[in-house]
Every structure is written in C-alpha cells, then in structure tokens.
Image 1 (tube, rainbow, N blue to C red):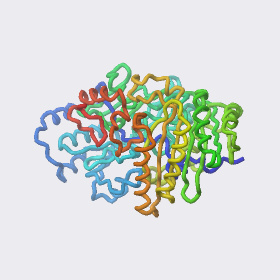
Image 2 (image 1 turned 180 degrees about the horizontal axis):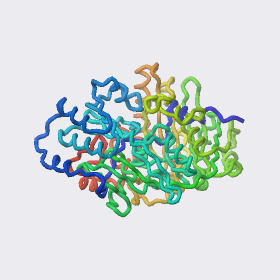
Image 3 (image 1 turned 60 degrees about the vertical axis):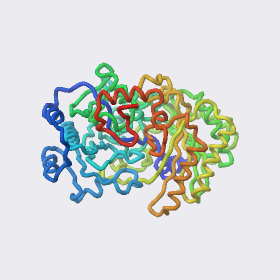
Length: 529
C-alpha cells in the first residue's frame, strides 16, 4: 500500500506541525584564532565613547570593506532579501543586511554595530518562530558561508554556519554518514544546533548539539574565536543548547557524524474516535522502544477535512524489525488502522520525505531565494510548546485530545493541532547539566501549531492565537518547560521554561563574554539575573 499523504512532513507544517525549526545563528565565544587579525577592531571598540548612528557614508564604507554584499533599503533586492521564512512577519525592516562571504566580513559587521550602537541580528535559515532573525539595525546573514566537508577517517563534518539542512543531508549522506537534526529542509544549521536540535535520529544518535565538537565564532569584541571541550569549555557548554542570539556570530561548526544505518519509515492512521487510545498506547510504546526507533503521534484538526490521529516514525533497521515493534502497538490500540505504510528508504530519501519534498530534487527543496531551482514556499504559522513528563493520566490524555477539538471550536477553517515527538534513548542519557540543553528527563516534546494561507481572514488568524493562549493557560503544564528552538514570545517565565537550572550559568557566561549585552533580543540571555 502506498504511504498515506499525511506522512509528508511539509504537509504537517501546513496543518500546523513542524519539527526542528531553529532560531538565529548566534552563540558563545572561545579561543582566538590567529588567522584573523582583529587588532584594529579592538582599538575601535576600546576608544569608541560617543556612539553615532551610521550615515550614508558609513554604510558605503562598510559595503566597500566587505567581500560579500551589503543590501540597503534602496537596493532592488531589499524587499525580498529582508523576508524571513515565516510569512506572518510581513514587515521586518532592518537598516541593512550584510551577506557575508567569510568570518572577516562578519567581524567587520560586528565592529560596525559596536561603533555605532545599533541593533544586530544574525541570520542563517531565518526560521526564528518569534522573528528574532531580524532587527531594526544590521542583519548579519551567513548563508553564503555554507561549505560542507566530511572527513571519513575521523567521522567529523566541518559545516559553515549558513548551510541548510537539505544540503547537509545531501553532502553528509553522499559520504555514507549521518548527522542527526531536524526535518525542515531550509532550516539553517546554526540555530538548530545552538538551541538543541531534535530530530528523527535523536534517540539513536542524540541531539544535533550533542554531536557538536567545536564552534568558531566572531565574539562581541570582534575576535574570531574557537570553543571546544578543552578550550573555553564554558562557552562550548553554552553553545550546546543555550539558544541562538546570545554571545557572538557563528561561522563554522565541527560535528561528529555516524555511519549510515538502514532506514525504515512507517505510519499508521486511525479514526478520530480512537485518538485518546492511540495517544495513551503510543506513550507506553515509545517508553519501551529501542534507541533505533523514533516516533511521533499527531492529533490534527484539518479544517473542513475533519480530524486525523496518526503514529509515524523512523527506524534504524529493516522493515521486518519495525513490523515486529509495531505489532505490539497495534495490539494495544486494538482499533484497526485506517491506513498504514512501512517502507525502507536511504538516508537522503528519508529526510526528503520528512521534509515534505520527496518528489523533488535537492535543488528544488529550497526557497527560490536560496536556489534558482527552489520550489518551496514560505509558510505562515504560530506555535507553542511543552513536554510530557512521566505517565500521563487518562483524564489528561482526554484533555489533550479535547484541546485539538477546541481548536476547531475557535477556528473551524484553520489547520493545526498537537505533535508529540518522542525523547528518551541517547537524548535522555545525557545529564541535564552536561550541556546547556536541560530537557533530558522528558518522555516527549509537544508542539501546538496552527497555520494559515494568504486567503485566511484576520479574524480566523486571531482566533487561532486565542486557542494557543487558552492552551498554554489551561492545558499545558507550565512546570514542564518549553523547547527553546520553538521560541515563544508570549511565554512569561521563558527563562525557566527554556533553560531550567542551567539558566544562572548561562547568565554568568553572558556577563563574561558579552558584558555590554550587544547580542540581545526580547528573550536573549541577560547579563544580570
């Protein structure tokens, strides 16, 4: 039987579900690399007492100093270059965007914003849920810094901070290796890794940040720096889950990559009447599953198309192996599936299916602004996240199912719902304080999302937002936390929700390496508690 259409991960996004979206490409600092002479930057920063807004001449001089391209509002490409992935952000209007070719370009941009006291944001894929990939000042875009090399002897991939996931999976996969990460093809590696990086291979190989070996960054002082386990380990610690937008601008990463396993995808669809039973059985099933199995449970309101309850996932092994595991789940659910699929795929094809572009070439799995052959489009959506902890009671399981039905009450034409992504395995075997990513005791992450098109009325969009607000107040457990890469500008106690007991250490690191709080936004790590 052919795979049900709902397996398409991009279709999930269109109905409000999305995995692995990241924030901006800013992280921590480390040891100075001799390859970049930044003494002039130090002198400029140290003696800059009276900050003055940049003039037209200042912008022109910055443009002339870059190997890359500075785009101002007067440039013909500005209208498209300023756009973020989420099309709900209709009016990001930075003073300029710098498309940097290398680390020295980034250093010059950091010097410029320090000298003039203007806002700065780093942008890789531009997927920040809150629009933090842009600002009113200078956007430092690193997408041209997208080289990918794989050392097969050391099993290390060196990846530019602007590389997109679809290109990484293509290059790493063609080398016979695997890097665990998110599913959206146009997410940039920087934000994904800095905020954690959940994905379909996480239970087997860990989060993206768990596989990070080192990061090169331009610091707030304008230095090209290096952070790894032996050099400035506190900054390396912060770069693994401390979230984007805090300490400096990433330029290059080194990741551990893994020999590619056999990959099998699966999906089971059930009638909505069985949704509570499906969610209950799924939770117990993933608790007892081997590391090789990652799975999610989707409870969706599909507007006029009704509801959908679905279990899907990825297994590092053969179809025969996953069929044996699925047999136990089917027995526990008892209700026959209305559709099912189990099939073997290679790594790249599996990630393209998860990305929702299985029928497209790698080049086509881009936005047209990223690749001339790109056929993907921007999406408009809003989201909120939480976690499942321990055993969920029957009453709470029914509450979660009813929450999806409540979305239809609020906004009957919108697509959206809840996605439960399994944790455990290699993710949870890391101590909560070993990296900045603190969420190491969760059964599953929850993402609540709704999406809309250009034809959707403002009233319906606002109704969806009221549903998210209601959900956060009445259904989600505020003590369970939230995923920092699904950054939520409406979250009140975000410090605790994203970082828990690790927040104070992040503040100390911030104060040490960015004491002037140059890299800041509404939910950035502060210099004071």
